[in-house]
Length: 489
Image (tube, rainbow, N blue to C red; front, side):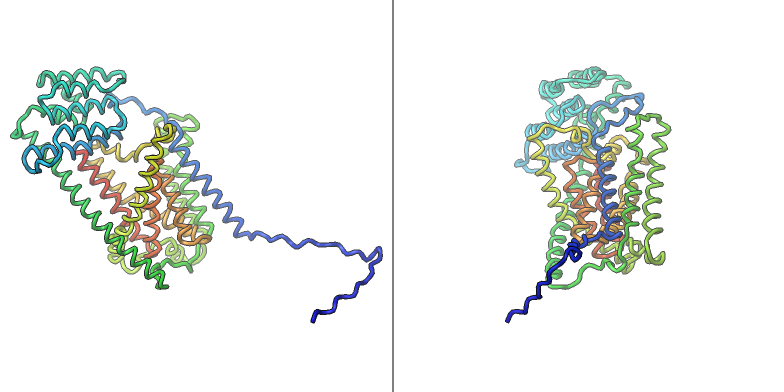
């Protein structure tokens, strides 16, 4: 039965009712601050990214000796060539079977993998050709002459290499020193091409290559085993999670605040502030030398200081919210970091496949200014000529300092701030992209770097303490740096 309708009341002129629109939903102050912080984060990340990938850095002062060629390309060619030379020497000594590729196939493989054929690459290929086929002088000279254009000053180096190929042992000591400086490791196969297997220097070369072989084999086997272990553990974790079993111990009750986002913005902004020197065309070497370490120190202090100083709770609660605590015990967290790194490997493998796909697709488009200016992490190029003391410093920087600082800021400060407003996967994805973008590497490397960062984030959520993700991060960086050390000996 329908309800009786309301009686109609006639309205006079003074009885007209005004129609009041419903109130608009208001945005809370907390939400407004979050939006502003998120926008600030985007602007700062974009600034650092733009500065690294698109700005032309001022030319450094000319050194007494100029090394020609692309150092990153030489480093890649060096690692590939050592493996190939070791394979050829093993075949020569009868260690490998006759089914292994011959020296001609090895040379062709190396030559085909050279992306940029400059003068340094041509000299390296000529040295390898002469070492693997010492009787084929014409082939070595053809490799030397394969480069189309030389920089000013390079023709003299080319002539020294040509003289050593045609008339071995006729270079002066000064020329040999210059050749060793210019060709780095590649001068060794050039000068030892006609020596027999009993020559001590040739044996030393074989030991150097064998060390890289052993390291590559051991690390490769360890990574392969870790990959399958991680795959099994990730599958088990997914099954447990689907059954409602809690596997993450991340303390969400601590909450997050905009202080964490603002702290990270301050860290990233100050860290990227030396880019302003390039924008302002300030090329004073003293200012440039002081800017980077000062910005680094201030960024770390500002980031952690704002995150801890302006968040709520006691000091212990504030540091614990960032993951700065011992978890379930330092040694247990260290072990969890090793196990967690195994789980990172399958995730990184997916990112690596995406990077390969991006690299393949990029070959169909003209190279942009960004891809031409940034090819690899600068620390790899620093290793090329670094003495032992500098290599130890670089190893400690990559395997100890970088994990401590980056995990504190990215998986500690930034992740806590993002988890205030986002779920774990979304916060992890945003943090992973920020982590990848601010690294000074090729754009093609963004997917694999993001995958690594996402894996470290899962370790942080799993253990809550940053110790485990720091261990996993340090294990990854340390392995890569040891490989570079052995590869560039």
